[in-house]
Length: 464
Image (cartoon, rainbow, N blue to C red; front, side):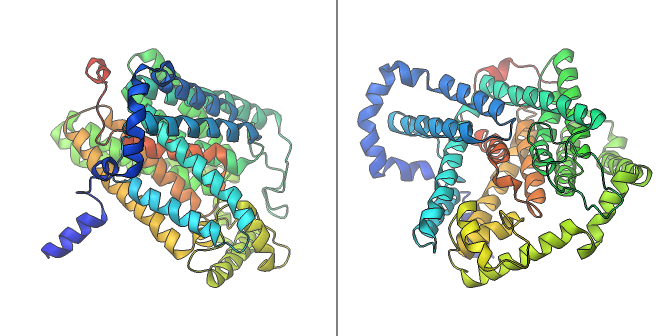
C-alpha cells in the first residue's frame, strides 16, 4: 500500500523539484554569465511591461477572424520568454515536466511524420502557444498584471458581446450552413460577433464566464463589480445565442465547476443550518432554470433535442463520419501519429475521408491529439492534465483554508479548463488561436499561484 501511495505521488510529481534539475543543467550554466548583464539592462527591467503590452494586443486582435497578426505577436512573446530564461532563473513548476514531454513527443512526431514539411507548421504553432503560456504565467504572478490581463480581456469581450446582441436583434448573414436546413431551426440567427463562426465565438465565451464570476468576487468597488457583472451577463446571453451545442456543454461544465468552488468559498460565511444545502440549492436552481428555458423557448428546445437525433441531424452525421475516419488514421499511425497541425491533417485526411465529408480536423480534441501525436502524445497530455488538476486542486484548498481571495483565480482557471475540455470532446475550436491562448491563460491562472512569491499588493487588497 505504501509503495502504491509513493508511486501515485511520483506520478503526480508532488515531491519533484524541477528547479533543482534546471540549476544543474547545461543551459542554466550558460545563461549564468548573462544574468549580471540582465541586472543593469533597461530592456530586461521593462521585460514584464513589454510582455503585458503584447498580451493586451493579443486580446484586442483576437476579437477578429483574421489570425496573421496573432502569429507575429506570439513570436514576440517567444522572444521575451527566451530572453527571460537567459538573464533570470525561470520559475519552473512540476507541471512543466509533462508539458515539456508532450512538446518533445510532438517534435519527434513532426520529424517522423509521413508529411514532415506540413507538420512543421503545426509544431511551430504549438511551440509559440507554449511560449505564450510561459509568458502569461510569468506575468500573472504579479497581481497588478493579473488585473490588467483579465480586465482587458473582459472589456474586449464586452465590445464583442454588444455587437453579438446587435446581430441577434438586427440579423446577421449566415456565412456557412450552421443549421440543418430541414429542421425547425432553418433561418435561425446564430450570433458570431466579429469571429464569423458561432461555434468559435461560443468556445471563446466558455472560459470568460468563470473569469467574470471570479472578478466579481475579487475586485473591490461596486462600480467595477456591476460592470463585470453586466459583461458576464452579456457573455452568457451571447453564448446561448450562438446555439452552439458544444459550447453549451462547455459552458454548463465551466459554470457547474465554478458553482461548486464558489459554494466552498462562501460556505463559512453562511449560518450552520444553511451550509448543507448551499451546493444542492445552487446546482438544483441552475438545473431548474436551464430546464425551464429549454421547455419554454422553442429554438433552445429544438437545438437541445438535436443532440439525440443521431445521424438524422446533419451536424451529428458529419461528426460521426469524421470521427470514423479519424479512428482509421489512428489505427494506421498509432504510436506517434501524423504530426501536429491542421496542415498535416489536411494532407492525410483525404485518404481516409468518408464520402463528401471533408474536414479541417477530427472535431474532437482527444481524437485530434491521438491523430497528431499518437497514443504516446495522448498519454503525455493526459499526464499533464492530471498533474495540473492535482496541483491546482491542492493549491485551491490551501488558499481556501487561508481565505486568500486570490484563490478564486485558481478556481476560475480550473473551471475554465473543465469547460474547454468538455467542449473539446465534440469540437476543435480549441486549436484556433483566439481560443487556444484562453486555454493557456486558464492554465496559467492555476499554475501562477503555485509555489510563486506573492506580490506585496496581496496584503493591501481588501477581500470582498
